[in-house]
Image (cartoon, rainbow, N blue to C red):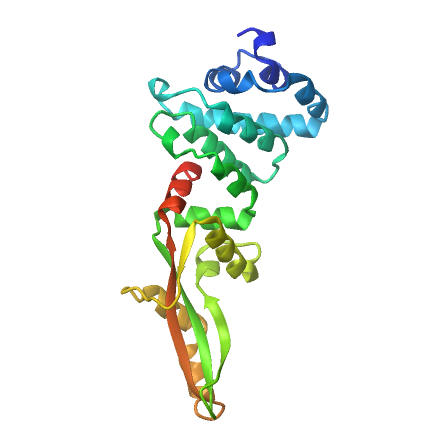
Length: 253
């Protein structure tokens, strides 16, 4: 591997014969031809940036090693180039892992069909917590939620006590569990989830957990009929879309 042929790798790695540089050089051959070496050289003068990119490329190399050599393919620049640029300044491990997984998916003939270029901008719109939720969804088809309404004693009006509540913050270690609804709304906007509001699924396990979490029985005993006419729990769910499933397959390993 000639140093001048591998401008980016030469900037990152002192030893171009190390296994990481070798395996990356083969998979990213077409991508490296489009990297602006002078521009990257300017960026990599910052030691933190250089160490961060080296770390991310090493992580990518580890994932490449798990792909049989006869199954590896060159990454198309359309997806490889923007991911390399993102990895240069992505310091969050959870988000970087999504990018390197996507890059690894684009590096195998068995999974290259799942590596859609649109997924790059989707990852950019995610927080570390959302990356954890995505991991949780790897083996899930849906997320159940409930709206808990209290009907007033006079008339048909009601107040919403709890909106779109789940047990996601119990099952997934979130930094900001109070943002759970924001995360789910973001997944809907990205097309990962579809909101099946007002439609219930047959398995009531998660709905019962929600009832227990929000003490529905106790709440009903304490407030009905003294304060409210009734307490109603409306069961719904978020469904993982086919597009969302493809995204998860490409970005979660």
